[in-house]
Each structure stands twice: as C-alpha cells, then as structure tokens.
Image 1: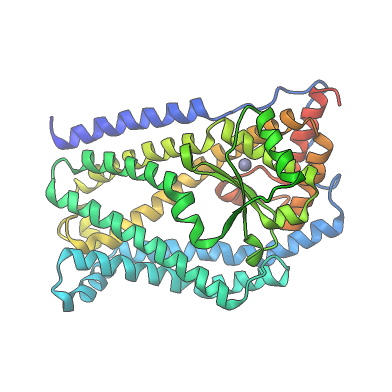
Image 2: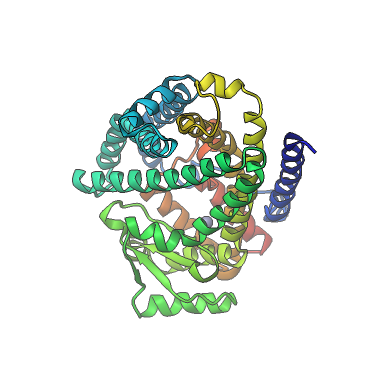
Length: 421
Ligand SMILES: [Zn+2]
C-alpha cells in the first residue's frame, strides 16, 4: 500500500470514529417536550428595556473590535503562511545563527506569535477599555500586560515544542510521519487536558479551597446526594481581573476539579451558588471533559493524516515558497493551516458544547428541584456579565459555547412544566 493510500484509509477510519463519537456522546435531546408545548424564548419577559439597552450598547462597542481581531489574525496568518513572505522572514531570522531547521522553527514560531499579538494589540487595548468602561474588568494596565505576556509566552512555548517534535518526526520518517504524528498528537491532547488544571490554570489564577462553613458543607452535601463525591471545591481569585460571575470544571481523573470564581462566592446568594455547583456536577457526572478530550484527540489525529495528504501534493509548499515540509521555514504555513482548521471547526465545537451545557442545566434542575432560583440566577448572571441576550446567528454559531440566557430560562420553564411546578 502506498503511504498516501494508507494515510487516506486512516483518515477515513478516524473520520468515521469522530462522527460516531460526537453522535453518541452529544445529548441531542435533553428534555422531553412539555405538555402544552415548549415555553417561548423571550427576552422582554425577564429583562427590562434598560438592561437590554445596556447589554446592546456594550456589544455594539465591543463586537466590531472582536470581529476585526479574528479577521486580522486570520488574514496575517494566511498572508505569512500561504505566500513566501513568512518563509523569507523565518529564513532571515535564523540566518545569523547558521540557518538550521531547529533555529528556524524556534525563532520562527516565536516571531509569528509576537507578530500575531502585535497586529491585534490596539484592538485588545480597546476591548479592555470597553470592559472597564462597563465595569467588567478590575485590572490595571500593569496586570493586564503581565497576563498578556504570560499568555503569549505560554502559547508560543507550547507551540514551539509541539512544532519541533512534529518536524523532527517529519524529517526522520518522510513516508510514515502521518502515523507517528497522529498517535503523538492524540496523546498530547489527552496529556495537556489532564495537566491543564495543574500547569496552565495556576499561571493566571490562585486557587484556594472553599473555606469550611455553611456553604462548603451544603455544596459537599449536594455532591454526595448526586453520588458524585468531589475531593474539593476550589475558589479562584478572579476578582483581581474581572467582575464576571463564573464557575467551571476542568481536568479529569485525579486532576478533575470544580472551580468557583470568588466573585460568585462573594456576590451571589448561597442558593444560586448551589445551582451553579449542581450544573458543574452535571459535567462531572457525565465525564464531559473526558469525552471532549477524547474527541479532541481523534480530531488531532485525523488532522495529521489530512496534513499528510495535503502535503503529498507540492501545491501548498510551492505557495509557501519552501521546497519540503521538513524545512524549518514551513512553520508559517503550518501555523496558517492550524488557524484555518481551528476556525472551520468552531461551529461544530460550539454546537456540541451548547448541547452539553443544556444537559448540565437539566442536571442542576433535577438535583435541586429549584427552577425559580435557576431563573433568578440566570437573570443575575446575564445582567452582571452583560451577556448577549439576542446574538446574531453568525456570532451564536461561531462563539456561543452556552445557550443564551433567555434559552436557558425557557429550558427551566419547560423543566418546571414537565415536573408540574
Ligand atoms: Zn457548564
């Protein structure tokens, strides 16, 4: 069998596996239709015109900059990767150091990360200033810059290590690299997701156990009632950056944790914190992080096979002005393909995520039987976080990992109808 055919067969198998895994693990239907039909998704029933106006003004100020940032990032990645510009730049950077592929990769990925950050920097500064104008950010420019640099260093560091490993394999096994990198990238996705809570999250936040007291006792009771023992509930010091209320579950196995923002613990009534924790317990119980990680691993492996097929024709390499993929100057091309692939997969990722979030919402209602508090809590979260109550379909499809607040409130009303409340 030719290497090309083998990679194509592997890609087809992984593709089928991916489709089956997504179809099976995604809760396409979370709630039976209630008697008398579902509750309508309504903004005006639960939010005052002033609240809607404030949210809309906020998004009118913020959204154009966010769109422009995504568009500029993609444009620059494509400009550098799908024309010889990026290869020339990388070659020139590494020349004083002898021009070896290792230096080309290390300096190239660092330079491209810095360029990517610089071209969107004015928009990032503007976005942060909008967040402050609306009281959502509590950071000063010093803290903001430190976070930006930490993110840049972490992103560039991980990208460089991954690319060096990738090209080392490509150079060592020109005919079979698709198989080695497919396995390697799948393992890497699982390892990163497992290590994320203990390696990456502490770079940006401090975590402390929720102190002993009524709230902690009540939350651990809730977890016991759910037969989902949690070792600890952690509080993140998010208030030094933001006023947003949030909580999440990350990691799996021994690194799985439920994290509450300190803004939530200090700013919301205990009944609402319980509901948020019940939602996170829903994620824990269904192993949502683990399933997401395994689907990501399958996707990464499939992407490696697809990359092999793409690079078996010289078209892409010729566009990028490099003779072969093993050339360190191909780093700009690789990063452009990653950027395009990431954007193309967003609608599917957010669609699956929204279904999983809806299931966690149903879980929190099943566990607490408290739809009135659920609705109050959704309103508070939406108003405090200035959530977009009626996103346009493009924004919804690309960026909304959760249903909108009015959708979540309608879900709670449907749940209440089904349970005769
Ligand atoms: Zn969730």
